[in-house]
Amino acid sequence: MAKSNKFGFAPVEPDAPRRRERSVGPMGAAVREAAESLTDATDAKIEKRRQNAKDAEAFRAAQDEGRVLVALELSQISADDLPRDRMDLDAVASSDEMEELKASIRERGQKEPIEVYPGPDGSYQLKKGWRRFTALSQLMAETGDARFGTITARIERGDDGRLARYIDMVEENVVREDLTFAEMAQVVITAAQDGGVGEPDPDALVARLYGSLHKMKKSYIRSFVFLLSQLGDVLPFPKAISRNLGVDVARAFKTQDAAEALRAKLQGCQTPEEQNKVLAGFVEATKGTPQTQKKKLEPREKFEFHVGSLKVTARRGECRIVSKDDFAAIPKPLLERAIKAFEDELRNGASVKLL
Image 1 (cartoon, rainbow, N blue to C red):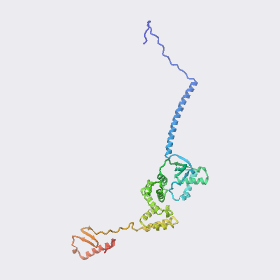
Image 2: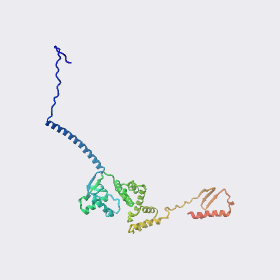
Image 3: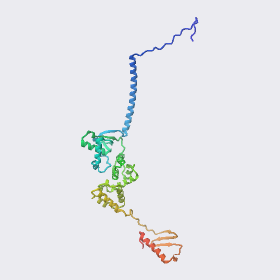
Image 4: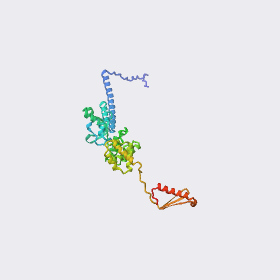
């Protein structure tokens, strides 16, 4: 509280200054709105840049993982580096199924992308989708329509290795059950001979190329690998060999020394029916023949065994039977019948020559 003066009055304190309200004119309001709008726009641009950076990062990741589809000129793609998993490609290219695929692409366009990997000089090599690539190539040659001159593709980024490319190539058709056992076996043989794969053992390659298949199917493929390895150059129609026939021939081949005779007969076959008849005849001819030769009995100086209460000792030229019974008490006719039965059994069932 302020101190009183000599007259007894306290000094008058001035009122606190009041803030002057200033009204904003039209120009000031416009400037303020412009400043606020600029701030909002700057924030939006910053957020947009942030989102663009995130999208670009996601796109690069998808591109690196091969999930981005691109349109490639057919002329940029070759299909000669990786062997195909189908036999008789010319027959497939001129088949009714190829015409149906071309009709579908002509009406509805390409629905499934192919897969390629980088080749030399900026070109690409076909990994998956040979039928689609062939269909578009034929349509382009037949019509000259530019829309058939490009193909939708997924590009492999990085290098997964040659074996992985083989696996990718067969995976699609294996899932669709579109390959015969002969074709699957041929892929194994080709991959084993491909130095870039690094696995020369066909048996090991069956497990790696067809790892998703049931073990029984892999067993069938191994049988066909053996069959084609032995007869591939003289089998005119390998795709026509059924699973059971191929497995039976492979089994017979492993136990019979008749390869040259069979090869000679196959060279004269003109139709799938003739080929399969020759193979079936080969299998029938081997039935009833022991799969393994009986090993010759190694001569032994002596061996012993017991039959009930009897002790038997066998050596060259002698078979001795020792018993607590009195053989002299046995009627002679009975003893003779027993000995005769013993001798007959030996002659009929044994492979040794009795002296």
